Image (cartoon, rainbow, N blue to C red; front, side, top):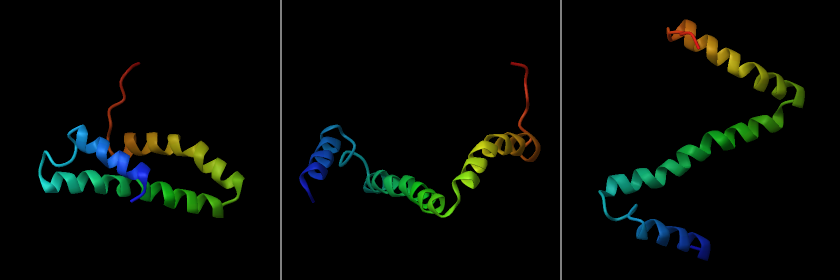
Amino acid sequence: MNEPTDARVGALCALGAFGHGSLGADFLLVASGAVTAAPLLLFAAGARRLKLTTLGFFQYVAPTLTFLLGVFACREPIGAA
């Protein structure tokens, strides 16, 4: 390991994140980094392959589609503001 990584692991140990719980909890804490990074890396790889206008259109439409999915597919209630 390099020095910054050693410092981060040392800080996590000192703060009580590692070694004070179960081994399963420690594994889940470490694995959560990879689970978080994977979609971000896949999005970056996919975004490089699209035209900028296509990517912009998807970014523009995504919130509306998420709202419509929640209302019609998941039956989320819509209340007054």
